[in-house]
Image (cartoon, rainbow, N blue to C red; front, side, top):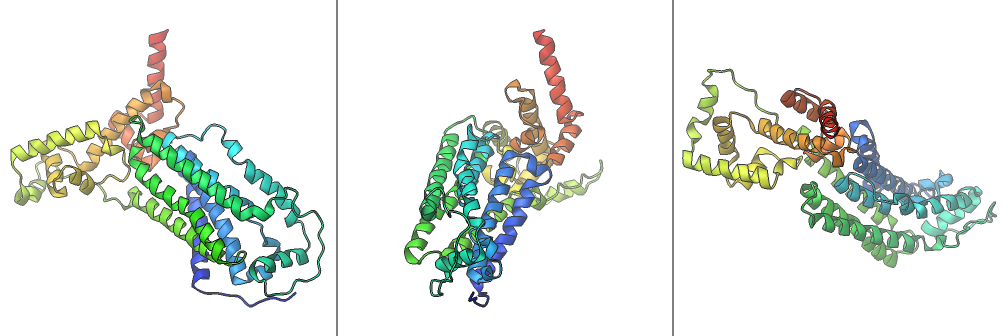
Length: 396
């Protein structure tokens, strides 16, 4: 068999880094307390599927496939899991559950997975010819036979068209789901819809890119461009994860001891009139009651100040002088008050505690437990059990 030397360039580096980051991101969402949320599991498996497809393209593009012929077309079935997993992620991020009949969405993947046996279990010469047919048409075939009929479905030759169709259907379905949720005033995930919409349009660009690449390149020779775009998608997801993480939010200020003049001196040079304070305070109360911005996990003091048309410094002064609490204390009070309402609601008794935490704006379940216990004197589970007992006593 004729082989070629490794082809390492900028595209190879981009694809390899995307594979590594995708594996990291997938494991990140599937492990720890994050893995208990349905949306996180869907996003984790989605990133691992992207990494598997990109890894095969990396081997093919760099000519390393000549050294590992058993990997030829090994990741092909994952083409049909990308669309469903992305749709599951969007749906579960909004409704905290998978759509009804979700197993049926994975039927094409299951069929392709079974069909994969017919080409995975083939002699090395057969796989060598398959590889050079798609990536190195300038190389001559070598004589080979086959152990099994290569394709019992008879549609494997339409892999590109079927992948494109799957991406179009699920990108459109995800966007329609977001649009429907945006029209519902009852949804508590409204703050996250812009991010979901952005990711959906990013995914919707995949079929467009597939069409352009396949029209410009013979066989799979342009797949390195698709893999580079997958790497971009993975890194955009990583950026959104970091942007929404509480780890990068400023820590709450340490409270001063009673009688200390330090906190008063902090604001002496930036005092505002009582009339302005009262107006901002009334606007703050209306905003927190009507729009509930505290449900956004990435809400910060500067963002809230921007919505109130004031400065972070003046807002912090107002909270300390008039409400005797910090921004973080106020956020915790509103979020725990909302959590108590949800935990008391029998209609959503099926939701787990960590799902309640996410609904009220906490990315960390442990932070939610700490704040809830500090404010109510009970754990969320104890509060829910007490509420359930009270309802049972009233109905009996």
